[in-house]
Image 1 (cartoon, helix red, strand yellow):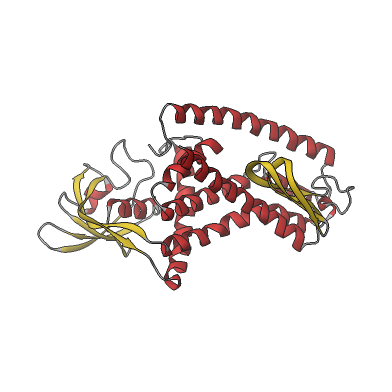
Image 2 (image 1 turned 90 degrees about the vertical axis):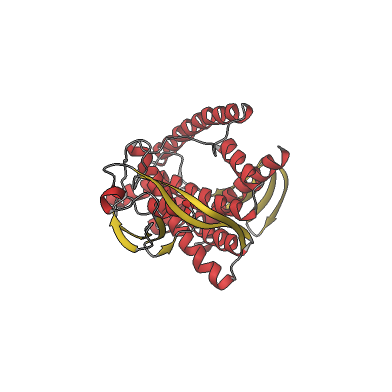
Length: 352
């Protein structure tokens, strides 16, 4: 339990600090005044002024923060709000950029760290009548060799490759029960009937063996880059799935994320790095949403100013909008935290 909490808090805190570091780097690079960069949240344990910025460590060990002069009020000393639209957009997007770059590092390291890989034959057990799989010629007993040129070593591989191409044509190489090799094409469905899956097959991994694998850095970096892009696509597809009702919407706050990260930490370093990369991408995409209080909303105000040919919305009004949004987000966070705690206490888990 303690390891779960500690590991989860460390993961989420690092991701938040990296996000804030993105804002910090962008602000410093463009000459803005960062009054304070803090690790954790006040009250302050320790602080030291270096140059014009106070660097602090705080009692609440959860993430970090930046205090920039004049984020909304252009009349503040060396105010960010008084800078050009390009500078403000860069500073506001700095956190999201860092949260999108971090997974490249995390996933590359995940490939370099020794990790277990399941390797076996993926054999089709059932094919749903009228499904894309049946219409394409897939039959029970077929061995799925590859999807779009990628070797399929487990059911997990098959599911991943199919989910990456929902609504688009994919090429599948089959080894039929009579030992003939055939290449077929089909289009995985966004909204399949209940229990059928995107292709309409039920498959299993046969004669699977678990092997330990680690890649040299010159192979891990491109592999990590590809994995990062795939993860971004899968996350986006997940959002679309929640919108069209094919993926259940299960909100999770900091407590839920801490629980999942702690559980995955027991599995190994590589899975924990993969999960951290996924959460980092989720944070970046969430921050793009133009909801008051999020970075996306601050960027939206800048874009509205550009659309109005430089005519700004009153700093007072903008401040009120962000404050209201912050309290709404805080209320939602309290509700989600209650749900997460209730699930955790009763033995439930987001990972099932």
